[in-house]
Length: 372
Image 1 (cartoon, rainbow, N blue to C red):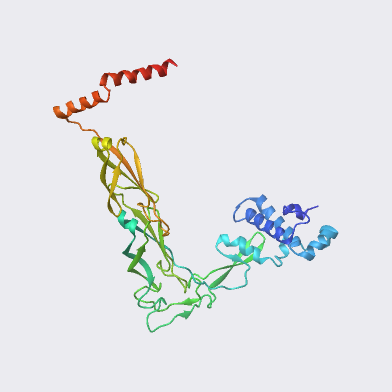
Image 2 (cartoon, rainbow, N blue to C red; image 1 turned 120 degrees about the vertical axis):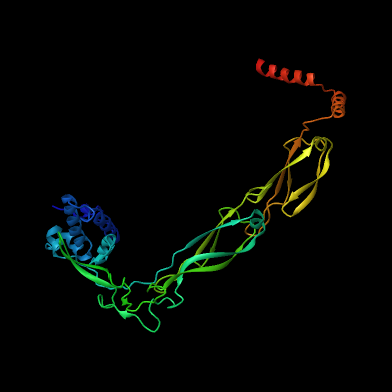
């Protein structure tokens, strides 16, 4: 004896929504159009529809639970009809380009226009401080001659003779389970229900034409590569009264000659002389807003990094700024005069350092490290 609950893979206390959901899943899985020449799938498809014809109807389900298959008097036979679940077949057969057994007619509704992408290159300073740019965008826009109607000025659209204005046509289709009526979009009017006899010469009846449009873009301070600016309604025109799409502007920031950016912080490497590092000095440091005097303390070692607070890039949300990090690179002179060499030797002697002593000290440390 067939167990309809087992066929639909649900428990006996399943809700109607759970039964419906399971039926949809199984019907799509075993539909003959997805399993051509598969007799087992064909058998299962018929079986699950037979089960749903009973369990999908609360009254039939009650009789089935009480009296078993005899309680439904054979009304679960799939070949006798689909009962009240055309809505489920709408879902199943949409994947084949149309619905079966639908009685409602729907014209093609408004369609939103396509979004557009524009790549905008910015100089480093433009991204940091913000700027207003004017860009040129080519896009499909509303036809300037017919204003989107698609008809020749002075004429009008006519009701489609093929679908009588419904936007849909019906075809009889024979299946292993009987004859179905397939509802599809009218191929003459494209689902609009209207026919254009005299088309606009500018857009050839599409209602849209290619245009070039200048658009002003306000780039906020602090944007970086990968930032996206969206402008609503500046994409391509919609159809059948639908809204236009949006324009998305993708930012690419060119590299700076001396500044390196990481987030809202910027990094700078600046060379100083050996004497400035040793004795300390006031130096001029370039910042985003001009040069600034900074004091290098005496004894500054190569690679030392200083931070100048709030000298970085503004936060794109307008809250605070990043910092400027300055790394010191000590330049060692390559060519020395005899006098300079003599002075350095005197400096080394005064400091108690000699080349031989330094070399000996280094190798002693190496020896100690390997002897442990």
